[in-house]
Structure formats: structure tokens, C-alpha cells
Length: 111
Ligand SMILES: [Zn+2]
Image 1 (cartoon, rainbow, N blue to C red):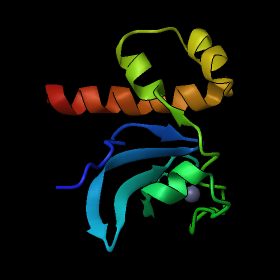
Image 2: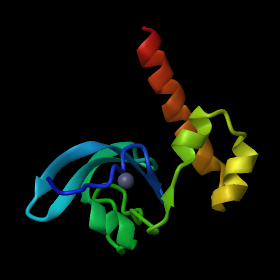
Image 3: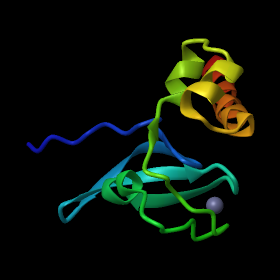
Image 4: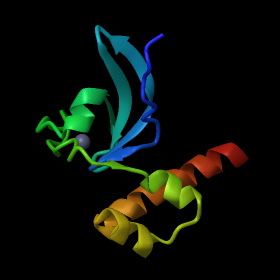
């Protein structure tokens, strides 16, 4: 079994990694959410991590800056938006978007 890094819930630029999709040849393919347009796309781990200039097929947003960010997990731990925004040097609007997704997930679980 090859070691596959778990990228679930990691954030690369404006992309949130939702879940592992499949192994495609030697590349791990992940199901991702483009936060600006809210559409699901599939990207390979290497494209996400290399900060490749590939863009979202729907909105044209650059998919990744190659920086792996734990915004999702920090929010779950209850860290403050302003703190997270400084920590990763991202706009607060990005953190709000992620917070939105975290809250939606909570709602789903309590239903
Ligand atoms: Zn998009």
C-alpha cells in the first residue's frame, strides 16, 4: 500500500479539499470545492501542492497557490477569524467562506 497524504479538509488558495476520489495512474485525485463559485471539481494532489497555474474550469479562479492551510481545522478548534487570517496571510473573506462551510456541516449533523 502506498502512502497517500490525507488532504481532506485542507485548503489550497480558494480550494477546499472535500474527500479522496480515486487513484489515477500514479496520481491521487481529490474531490475539491472551488469556494468562489461553489462548484465541485477534481484535482490531483500534485497540482494542488505544486501551485500549478491551472484554474477552476467553472470560474477561472486560480485553483492553488501551493500553500497547504489548516483553516478548516483551526476553525473547528475555535480559533478566531482575525487570528487565522493573520496566521495564513489570507483575506478574512476566505476564512468566512470556510467558516460558512464548517457551520453548514454542523447543521447537517444535527438534523
Ligand atoms: Zn470556481
